Image (cartoon, rainbow, N blue to C red; front, top):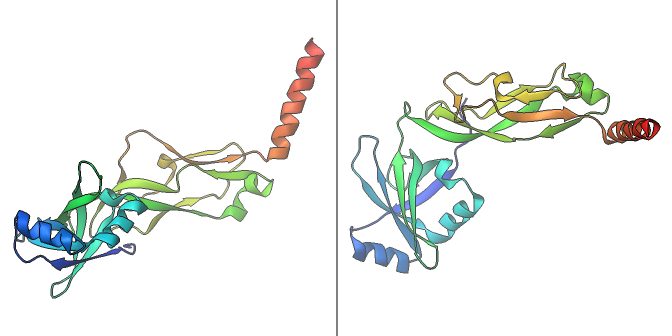
Length: 207
């Protein structure tokens, strides 16, 4: 099931070249180009304030967008580059690539933890520590999962949950080769304190 893809609004840029790009910036827009997907390149303008907001939100280069241009059909795009002013570090141009449904893309997918009540470790006061609330997966553009699910059923204090413990959607695979940690169930603070005190007492008796 595909997750909700954020919209990115743009307008068609009349003309190409440096003159048209400079005019776009004077008008409060950031010029860009949309290419790929078996169609001709399309010069566009993106409102400066909207783009800055997206950039500040993070992961702009790994987010799939639904590009909305008035008078044209929506198209899925991913950013392939943001050029910035050498001094001010503000965006001056954006490159967007159209994606076919069969294209593969790296995206961050939310991790959903379920069945807390069926985890003995949590019932006994253990704490679920989430190491990664999102994981980067390589997925098909036409079949992007809304989330991946971690089932906590049967999990005990001390259990560590790795990416290999999670059933990924068909066609999805992690972008990191190693078997990284997603979460763990740690002992409650009171129990940890008791263990530390017991260890101190044992050390004292050995002295």
